Amino acid sequence: MVVTADSRERFAARGHLFVVADGMGAHAAGELASRIAAEQIPMYYLRQAGGDPAAALRDAVQQANVDIHQRGQQNPEFYNMGTTASTLAILPTGAVIAHVGDSRVYRLRHNRLEQMTFDHSLVWEMQASGQVKPESQLCQAIPKNVITRSLGPSPSVVVDLEGPFALQKGDRFLLCSDGLTGHVEDAELGPLLAALSPQLATRLLVDLANLRGGTDNITVIAVDILADSDQGGLRRRSGPIPEAVPWPLLASVGICLFASMLLGLSGSIGPMIVALVLGSIAGVVAATQYHRRVNRPLTNLAGASPTRHRTGPYRSFPAKPTAELLTRLDQVIAALKTAAEERQWKIDWKAFDTISDREQPLRDQEQLAEATRVRAQAIVDTMKQLRNQQRTARVED
Image (tube, rainbow, N blue to C red):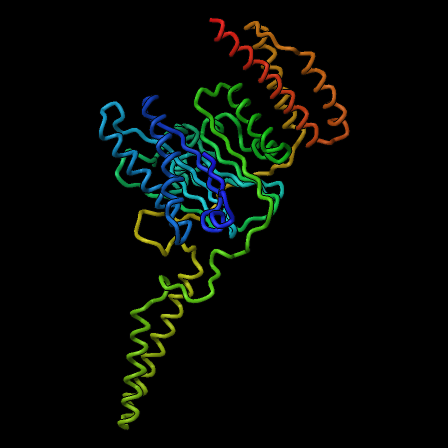
């Protein structure tokens, strides 16, 4: 789901919103849960006119969870249905992510692909707890598709909040379901995302996942950042932040100062000094608390809804196109040709070869990014031929 701001005022208040939801459970139940999340999260987020956007995004995910849970309780066929939800809000002052499940949000920056979300899966939770090491045999044996958190099964859910992250011109974000990451490795995601346009990258990534046996619905959204954000703007205010002020401590400071004044007028110097010292201590503690609250993400200041504020990114990979990536794409083409022969698909390989002929000189000259673009376009065009052929066959049947 993509909801772009339709005015400067809307962008200033809520920015652009992107949502990926991947349903779980019986086929119909999973689809219903993901549809509710994709529709309701933007509605709840945008109808909150003021306040902190991160808190509004968290609350929107929370409310969508309530809606999905209630719908599941109303029909035995939908009982315990659930969905992941990864949301990205691009604001004038930065990016904020609210996340539940194992759909992911990545950021591409300066030839590095960074995973900005924490997978709520059994294997990730066990690694984070220190119970298993990523390279161990036990870790490899843990099923990768066991989800520890999702929207719907329970009346409440903990939402991870990430950010705010300052934006840089040229950043590219990728939101995707596990149907993609289950078949396309991070070592491929980064270089492809770096070399290709958003449109070509998303189309190729879905095609690669399908060619490698992807049977799940695969959702991919790419978002390009065209200008820098206001660095640190989510924390900068023109005056005090009321919710961050430790009012009880400030009241204690006032009482101590007033008492010291009265004691001084009465000539009680010793008690006056004690009152001043106590007031000074309370003032230092109040200032320290206020500083800590202001300099942590504003999302931690809002409400008591179940929230966990993490500190992404969690993993980082090189994203520069390589000869190894081109070799992997060659292997995809070889497998596609074999499948076409075995299943008697009618594909115009001459058109493919015409595009591919442009790629080899680029590879020889080590213009790997351009070679990747040419090879990717050839794969996408060939897959388009195949989809059109299959669509025609279904109509004829």
